Amino acid sequence: MSPENSVGLVTPQRVRFDTPLTLKSGAVLPGFELAYESYGTLNADRSNAVLVCHALAGSHHVAGFYADDRENIGWWDNLVGPGKPLDTHRFFVIGVNNLGGCYGSTGPLSIKPETGKRYGADFPLVTVEDWVAAQARLADHLGIDTWAAVLGGSLGGMQALEWSLQFPDRIRHAMVIASAPKLSAQNIAFNEVARQAIISDPDFHGGHYAEHGVLPTRGLRLARMVGHITYLSDSQMAEKFGRQLRHGEHKFSYDVDFEIESYLRYQGNKFAAFFDANTYLMMTKALDYFDPAYAYAGHLPSALARAKARFFVASFSTDWRFAPARSREIVFALLQNGLRVVYAEIDCDAGHDSFLLDDQHYHALLRAYLENIAV
Amino acid sequence: MTEHERRVKAEQRERFDFAVIANWLQPGERVLDLGCGDGRLLRYLDETRDVTGYGVEIDQESVLGCIRNGVDVIQMNIESGLQGFEDHSFDRAIISQALQTMHTTERILSEMLRVAHEAVVSFPNFAYRSNRAAIAAGHMPVSEDLPYDWFDTPNVRFFTIVDFEDLCARLGIEIRERLAFDEAGREVADDPNLNGSLAFYRLGRKS
Image (cartoon, rainbow over all chains, first blue to last red; front, side, top):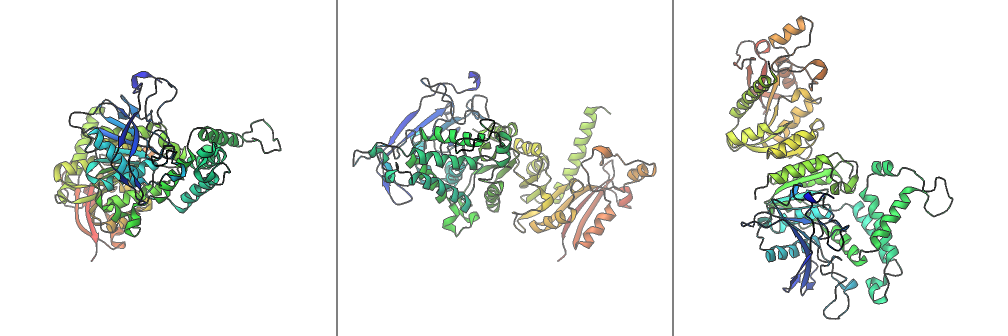
């Protein structure tokens, strides 16, 4: 990594909020903490703040690296930095770990004040709306009245969209990438398989695995393997793995024969070693519940009528998890409201995961759009 | 002609095209510009007529150009129609010198008049005097408004003012206004199919 376009060393921050937060489910969190990072400098007008929202397994560590762990580079480091498309010379960029996360914000791994034990399965289900409400508290804390932009891919894009609905006056640009206005039955089905993998792991113990001193690693591993299938495109999988054999011949066993099996196992193992199963369950449920049109008899244009932001919407040609047609639903609902929007359908063979890559055209689009945002 | 002169001339020609279209629009209108390129017509209309709208474009470099120009653009292929756009949701749909680059001429014209109250169309007239002369001399024409060699042209439909008006009649499209200009930019009244290099139309549905 070349240091001249990296934000360099970063230090995560943590902030506590003691005003109770009523969640969409009706549950009340008496208080909570959020872990976040910032890059760049807030200008005197406080007009250059950009919030980057993470997807299913992301964190507040968007860019840069840690002094004690230089290999731990932020998950969207190719986007955020001096001279990069989201240029930290111009913008003050915030990454935040969402409520219920397992990277430092209050979540199932936190201690429940009433019991002195970890929340575990007792942590209430939080939704995209709740995340945005919690992020708004962080914005207040940082003195940010209005975001120049809120952006994210996938579940992160849903948060950007939700910002434009919940706080129409606090966001000037919403950048919704590789996202959807709600999950399809197929999307929910994949999430349910992932959840069942975790819940049916004998080590899950109804979510109270911590008390039993175990982790539902097998379930979490399976859940991630299923997820990974949906992140890649058929063509990319064919190109990357095809029917390549691990050992050059058929082994006639249930060990790894094909390279794709090895890849999925590797991804599953890696993930299960650090991610919290309760958080994973909750994140998938937050995805399933997200549906701004639900309260409007399924009519998305009515749901988006509140929005005032300008929109950047982008999809990827080979993304079948949130296919281009799903982004177009958002675009045309915005259009029906006369809202300003640009929509790009990017040719990229990497499927859903394309949004994390530094495809030249994709990054040129992001750069061009961000450069035109006045600060 | 040097490359610079050629570019200056092309820009003048383009401005001329834009000005003719702008003259037909009312300030504050909402338009859809099909095959909008890098969005410079929409930008011009915004700056000169306070007209707002969206461009529709398939080419990725053009979409990037629109974003750089601060123009709202929807990347999609209009050959298959304008699905997603509501009926009569725009004052006008414009297609400026792009209709001849598309295959589904009839569908595009019908869709324009579905999503907008009126369509504005400009195109190069293949039957223009100098084009006829080129054909008579045995060559595909290369002119001010048809500036491409036959082997390197984005155009896929070659038609004339007369042809276009026949098609409109067949599709039940009403021609509300027509303007034709020669290569020097002078308005042509006499025999536009022979003397007009560039044609402009305001089209509507017959009521």
